[in-house]
Length: 281
Image 1 (tube, rainbow, N blue to C red):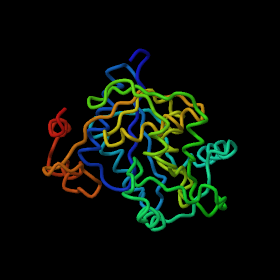
Image 2: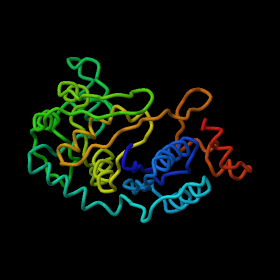
Image 3: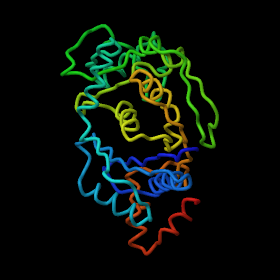
Image 4: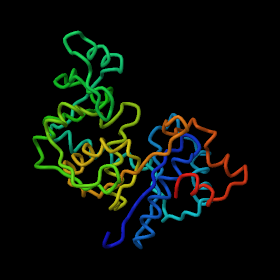
């Protein structure tokens, strides 16, 4: 990691941080510190219906309690909507996107038709059947999808480097798999003006992130992000997908797992060292 790794932790302020968040934050923080690099914080608050100021304040408090420090200012996605809109305009000008008015119910119905067989499941769920691909709906009333076949035809060979324990190595990205197994992903939801895939790619580039650390559940989405990086002429970082913190039944932790919220452990007298021990660090 010559040059000093630049890492980030990017929580959403939609609930309390739990042990899984602590693990992700510490992994990113320690990777940067061990490499004399930089650790950044990003607040992913594009879901305005669920984000709350009190949860954002709790994020800062919990991370400081863990002993983590980060550079200022903190990047907030809600301040970046013009950048997302500009990227969508760039892709639209190349005729790589289209407007989609399908509801989730419409998509389920199309995929459940007898002639379709069992629906394929990709990183975003059921692979979109392309209903609106040539419909030309008004963008203001629709979600925006990436035309995957056109996008893959517009780029050369794609690949990325992974250093996480489960997938370490050099990974090539194949057009046939992206078209059939991923499909026309949503780049902007009608109520947000962006999506996770678009915003994470643009924000990592804007922050100069060189090493993306995140849970192994997002490994399959990496090919999408590498494609968007190439389409938007952005650098591709090194990826490190780490293990997930799970409950006793083996299920990954979620925001609703208040029993494992850091605030609860703090209230019960736990120390930051206790948290590191609980998550295997």
